[in-house]
Image 1: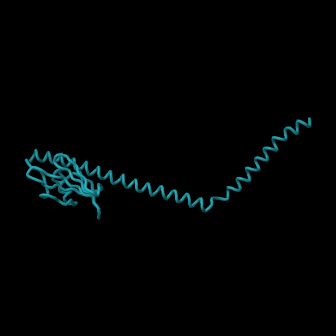
Image 2: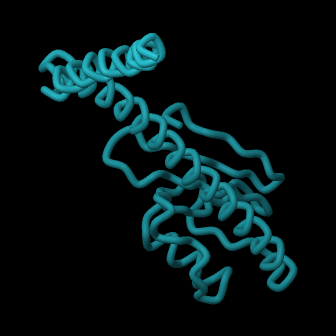
Image 3: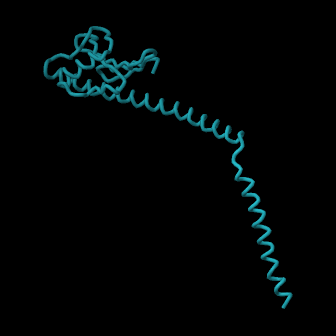
Length: 165
């Protein structure tokens, strides 16, 4: 009988030994993180956020550029309708024009009947220049202080991008 009780105590003793060793580890690790560990985590988060910001700004500028190209296509279609109605294309200047908010507003008023076809938050201003008796180009320029992207669309549908795009 004594032999059985000793046999039953052995697993209990082993269990207590293991439980006590884990308890000691828990109290040791509950002291917190070291300064080096915290600095490493902060550095990793900083690197990831820097990469994320650069990628995000690239996506935003690409989306604005696509939006400007879509508006330029709409203007080109409206020009076709203008030619059908009046026998000529709507232009704002001979040769080359400088896109401003007033030229964009004039395009909206004349070709689209005052609709809000050129959104202000698109980041581009647009003008239409005459390049001959029955030819035109649509110029969209990014609203920036320096290195503004310039897009052009010819009457036959060819897009060109400036060097700063």
